[in-house]
Length: 566
Image 1: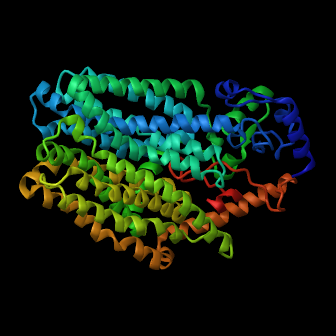
Image 2 (image 1 turned 60 degrees about the vertical axis):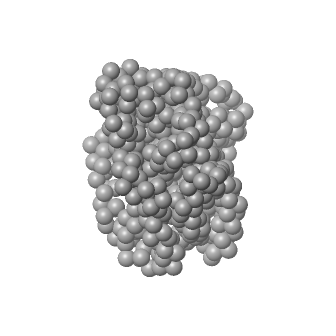
Image 3 (image 1 turned 90 degrees about the horizontal axis):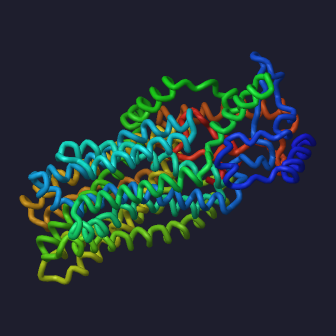
């Protein structure tokens, strides 16, 4: 750190104390110290000042107070939980929907399928839009429309209206899967990110599990209108809390916005260092890349295609349960709609056990990384939990399939869903981490393709569940996803053994390596020009922009040292 940085840090620490509410309202926080800093460049149109975070910059999300970070984490997690809850709570009102609109069960189930299908569409737009307009702005717009479409679903007078409103609610609500997850990585360094990321990651799993339980009991007394009103109320509450309490956290947008404000304020020309390195991103280019590249990766890279199919089967199976449980526990055991939802608690227990397991397994991963020559574990080290979860998942599904006799206590059958819930979370999070570590700057595209495919499976599985159970019976029908999961068991073992060899042949993996090398050289040259670019370890100082697999754009590359421990 140079003398100028040391002086600015001291001034910022002594003279700039901003409240949480000021940080929420003001996305720039331009102080005299920020204006007077000696930036690279000359402030002209051809040689703009290149701005970056100053040390101890109060608007840098990594410097937010811990209370602010955890407040944002909590609101983000509950917003996602509410959206995921909305996807499955609908099933508690199926009986009233069938009666109100005089439609058969498969048609009524379209309200679940199309809601989940919206997950395949929304993330392709929300992640790149947040790059241009910020995570907060995109969330406020998208989640606000999510609330409005929930209102429309409650007030629907026909099944077609209900289904259309549900689709758009899912598409706009899916902004939580990209933007709010990215906020956590924006604020926490890689070393601090484990616990908040685990808490956030549990929301997409726990929400669908809680939904049928609450929806089942509420649907008995109030029908779909009562369930829809609850969904609308919860989503409106979370939108209000987010709007009031959550500041913008996406660093590239914040620096771009600050540069524009400083240009207006001083009459000189400023640009963020990140925009200077990668060039200006246009709306057309950003959206076209976001829409096309995921599909290229899905069909060109065997790692992406095979593991995405694996995740899609597991994710689709969870949503198949929403149609299967009423058959198994309602028709088979004679349980009422509310009580028939309680078996989902078995899944919830398994998911929570998985999160505990991952907490301790993360420490083992850190030791593996520390023991490697470059301080980084190979991507295949991420697959260890997937191997364990891959074995647990078919065990749980076969257990569920062949113990659901009405003559047996239902608790025996429910116990089989615990290893399924446990394995599902391990598979899900392990594969996501593996894909991110493998494709790095293309992680957003890879995970968009992955999300689209698994959402299509999740939307499709409930539609044929009732017919499959009627034709095959509850035991063989329940065995179908178990067989599919069993076929996929070798995949993580094969990639763990041969993944490095496969990566060397991947076109996009090699492209990532080349871009990383080029960007690292460009960043180091830019830092050397500044004359004060040394960190406390003597290495090049590169500010962390909080790259996160679910929120960052593909073109943005985080080259900060924190990434090495991610």
